[in-house]
Image (cartoon, rainbow, N blue to C red; front, side, top):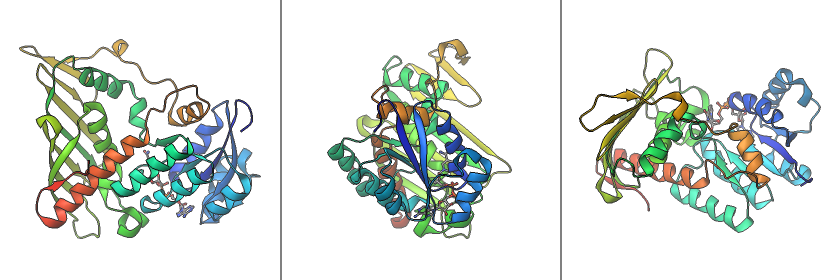
Length: 328
Ligand SMILES: NC(=O)c1ccc[n+]([C@@H]2O[C@H](COP(=O)([O-])OP(=O)(O)OC[C@H]3O[C@@H](n4cnc5c(N)ncnc54)[C@H](O)[C@@H]3O)[C@@H](O)[C@H]2O)c1
């Protein structure tokens, strides 16, 4: 690695990667050095939008790209069930990894990635951008500091006009439906802001005639006794809407269009903007600066493991019609 610089290559150049290419180019310490996609037309579309990367080496096989270019880091943005193999290959061949959500489609795969990261001394960052947002950072600090006592109950919901098109509707590529797609962000933010460790889930899902889940109703019980409910609604009139409420012993904290705090006996009050602060920069800048040893990783692989274990238990419960344990 050249002193103070990080050479970044892309695995997957579809819809999500397009924005990331531009965002990495804005990180002063980063250089984009190669592009890979099994569909050359995906690479061409990125190159047309971002002409300065048009002349970079192009690959249809990420193994060939990593073996030839030896990037310091890769950003993986491909269908969900392919994340694990690409991330493991990259780490084992010397690259730091930013992998899109969900990091992996089973707790076993997730654990193996963390072991590879530790064995090779690499950065492994998961693409949950809510960790950089002021409101969720405030909630996490307020709750996990214990300022309002222990968490007793969590309720969170997400509703999206979810298309589930293409590979997203094919279980062998998506690893699941809306729960494993946008729902992955909700599971992550519930676990990250609350600090809870779920131990058991009981869930119903409705595929609405498709091969993957569209609607999910999930109850869960955590280490220490906290319980909660999570609703994923993939049929929504338009756009994406979300809500999160955490009841601690001494307060209710909730996020809808803003962040609110309600302490015992009082009305809900909006948390003033100046009491909340975003992490400076986005996940791409954090990825590069974590590689350079300048910042802590804000979305470590442990978050990816926690989501994978929870999601796996939900699917097990739906399949069996019984409660399922969350792998510890
Ligand atoms: N963090 C977010 O908010 C966010 C938003 C959108 C998508 N995503 C995630 O990004 C990832 C990609 O989603 P998308 O919307 O860009 O999908 P997409 O279909 O637009 O792009 C995926 C690309 O991966 C390519 N691909 C498939 N297999 C490959 C392989 N083995 N090697 C290289 N390239 C391969 C496809 O040809 C395609 O161009 C998913 O994990 C998704 O969940 C995250």
